[in-house]
Length: 117
Image 1: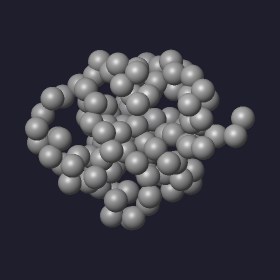
Image 2: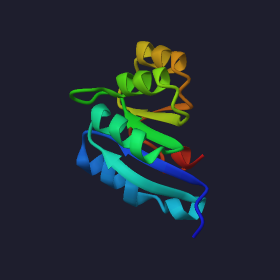
Image 3: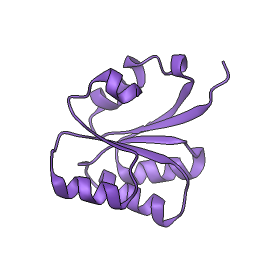
Image 4: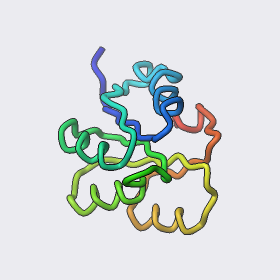
């Protein structure tokens, strides 16, 4: 199949990152899951190598959180869209996400249809 978009999933919880990778038939919406990462540092390295179009990331992770990941990528002017999945309905997180031009900020538990949109 010819994919239009590539996706990297970043979450420190294996059940969430693997669940996201496998729970959605990404190929049906022409997206190729090219990798999963367990924290922001691992994700930055993967973004440099794999150049995904879309990164779905959690905010709170050890070592390097999702907002720090986005800040690093934005400072390096790497073109990709970010979708944040967070269990935290915190306005400060949302403000920072807006500052870094995050495409979407979705709260956990996530509705699959909402994520696909």
